[in-house]
Length: 221
Image 1: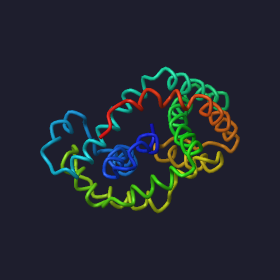
Image 2: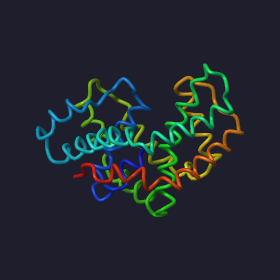
Image 3: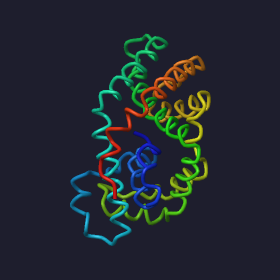
Image 4: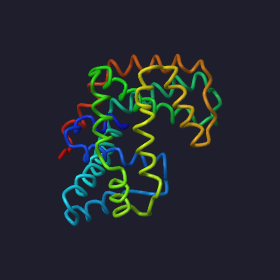
């Protein structure tokens, strides 16, 4: 799952919603910093209410991912989209197709949620902007395996750039995916891969509801 799929149910609780984004933010800005379920559960109740909202939001993210990544619909889509990329990347040593099958399924789910409710992305960004990014960073530094000094800055850039809107367009999504590939030191995709993104978008329109069904009953504040 990606940012919107994790957070869209909790926009009336911005600190909790921001907590659901923390693992993905850290995955971009500082991959050495880990937030572990056992450590987080041990910390729950040791802090004030606002800090606990962020912590329980992080736990929600981890719980969602555990359920989502075992969902048969997700596994089917990940495999099918990966095979479509493999047709354009036939080298058996090319690691991109399975990686893209996974991440494109997640990003297209965010796009599907935004298509279903055109007001959800503005509401999501408004909720995240309403939290104090320094407070989020401080909370993470109390419960993570290592300290980070970059998270608050990245949250500000996240709200400024609003790249989740790019997932609604195949060509703009290709640009964002190529940024991810570059970050993990894999070759970028050619423009022809937008055809696969179009196919993936159609698949998610058919299966988005099934994908979300398993996690919509998990946790929550």
